[in-house]
Image (cartoon, rainbow, N blue to C red; front, side, top):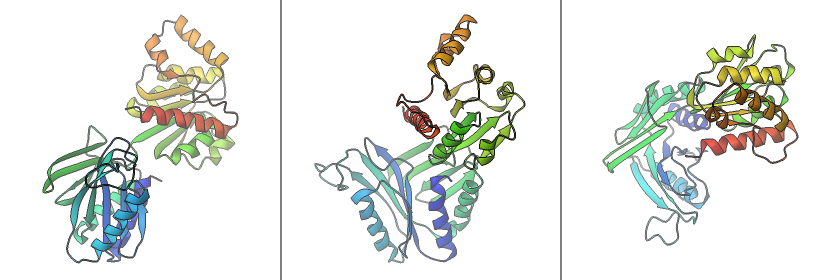
Length: 322
C-alpha cells in the first residue's frame, strides 16, 4: 500500500463524519531536513493522526499547533518555515540535523470532499494523478502530466502553487519469480514501488505465494519482455531467473531499452561469462556499464532475504542519487 493512502483515507473519513481535520504538507525542503518534499500528515480534532512531516520535536510541535487551530471555527491556512539549526535567529524547529523545510497547515474544507474522495479512489486503484495545493485549496486530476515529481513556486503567502504527481512514482520489474524474487517483492512493497513480476513457469510455488507483487505475469519466453517492459526514467529492472540461458534471454530482450536501473543476479563467474559474450558480439560498453552485475551492494549476503536487502539498498542508492 502506498504510504500516502492512509493519510488521505483518514481525511476522507473525517469529512464523512464531519470531524474537523488539518492537513500538514512539506511543500519544500533543503539540506538534511528530516521532512522531505511531499511528506504529509493529517491531524483530526479527535486526536487521530496519520503520516509524518519528519518526526521528532518539530512534528510534535506542529501536531499540537494543528490541534489548537482546529478548536477555532474559522478556515486556516499558513506556510511556516522551519530551520533545523540551533543558531537560526528565528523559526527554529528544535532539531539540529541542518537544512530547512516549508510546511503547509491547512484546514480541509467540506467543499473539498469530492476532490479528497477522488484522491483516495485513485490511490486505492494504483492510478496516478496530479495534486495541486494553493491558497484556493485542493485540486486533483487524474492522468494530468507533470515533468517532475514535485513543483513549488511561491511569490507570497497569498500567491503560491504546489504540484505533485501522486501515486506510485517508481515501478519495479522483477524477471524470475523464485525465492529471491519473493523476498525482494516483500521488501520493495514497503518502499512504495509498483511491482510487476514475470516468470515462464505459471505454476511456480513462489509465484503463487507472492502476495506483495501488484501484477504476476506469465510469459512463454523471456524474449517477450521486449514488448512487455517499456523504457522509463522511473523504471527499475531486476533479472533473477533460474539459469544462465533464461538470464541471457531476458538481458537480450531489454538491452536496447533505457531504465533508471537494471541489474542481474548471479555469481561473478556467470556474470563474467555473460558480459564477455556480449562484448565479443560488439555490444557497446556504455550499455554494459549501465548494467549492475552482479546485482546488489557487496554485503556478503547469503539468504534470499539478505540478497533482497542488498538489491533494495542498491536501488535506493540509485533512486536517491540526484
